[in-house]
Image (cartoon, rainbow over all chains, first blue to last red):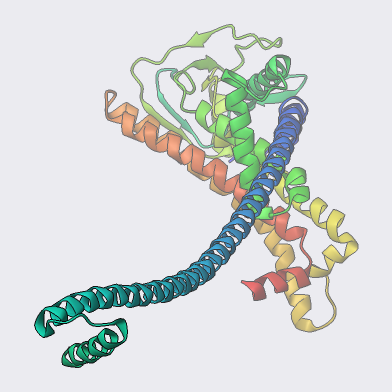
Length: 161
Length: 292
């Protein structure tokens, strides 16, 4: 093997020239370009991250608002429901009262009507009884007698009922 | 010596003397490679555009540069160090792989010139083609010198892969080891030399001597690993082509393409690791080992 110092030095210089040329003409511009691009990509990624963060914040706000609205709606629904139930209860009570009042009124009217009917029936029966009694006893009865007789008969009828 | 012989020489042969400086075929080839690389660099710079949508050549170069930078960063894990080491490591890789692959090109090896037939102006005046080769292996400088006396007009290959010449690989190894020391001193100052000269106790003193031997061994290891692999590959291809000219050498060419890539990568990676280690203090290394 032939080791020559001159050739070694020549190759060192040769490599140095290649190193210099490649560094100046290729590595520096390409690395600068790649670094710039990397920085731009990083900046764009950061901006995209911010946008994503904003989106997430908005999403959270939307969910919060929706939750609030939902809770409010539920509360309103509950309020309305309880109010309606209270009103319904009130109306029911009023209706019950009204019905009771009507029932009382109706009962009173009925009782009154019954009394009137009884009175009219009594009068009719009185008249009929008077007529019958006149026919039976063959004499005319005065009012006082007739009334006495009638009362006796009616009392008997009522008792029999 | 006949020009039509199977020529295998362990050392590069002189094809021309320029002002007394012998230019060997490996230097001639490495000059061609260097001209190509420098020319390519200038051409690339002229076509370079600062765009986010590169195409063609710029796309390819950006891809290669980015891959090599990421490779350097994966070892250093530090952008400042990566920016410092990257040009040297990338140049090592490109220079070595180009020289390795040039040796596989047709014409590199078979084109023979008669020694001394190239004029002083560097122009090849006579090229001999090989037809029926016969094996001749020249081994030592002594035998070359002896033959030079016997044969004034010896046929030598015009081109030879630069990395198949020990002078080139030694030069690259010296650059690598020298830069290791430079980076070590630039990062640690004179404390870097403490690992070589340490009188704190006899063991450290002995370890320092071993470290010095290690630095020399690095040069030998770098140089002989690259030279041995590439030269052996070339010999393998020459012999296989001589034995069976058709089809059989193809797998060996593929193997040599792989070996050429791997050797360039190994040289670059080892250089990078040594650079990185040199820039780390003793405590930093211990801390990293403990963390690992």
